[in-house]
Amino acid sequence: MRLNKEGLTAAEMVKYIIPLLKAYQLGKCTVCGEELFDCQIHHKRYGEDINIYDLELIHGQCHADTHGKRSCNGTLRH
Image 1 (cartoon, rainbow, N blue to C red):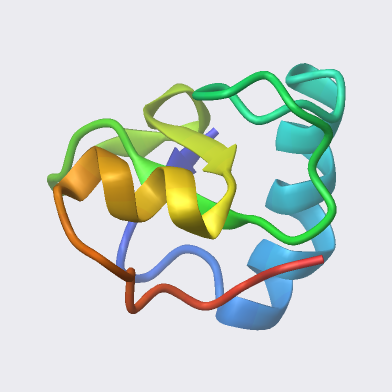
Image 2: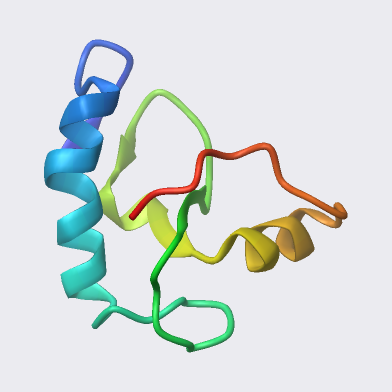
C-alpha cells in the first residue's frame, strides 16, 4: 500500500491504517512493548513513497522520547 499526498485523508488513516497497524503490532507499542490505548503514528522515514512499513504506532511519550522532545505535537489516536 502506498501512502502519498494524493492518497489517504485523515479520516481514512483512522479507519484503515491505524487498525491495520494495531493488528500488525499485536496492539503493542513498538518502542516500549506496552499495550496501545492512545497512540501516535510515527514515521520511520519520510518521503514521497511512504508505505505501511514506514509507519508504526507508539505512545505519545515514546514518540516524544524518540524525537528527543519533552512532548510531541502529534495527534493522539485511539
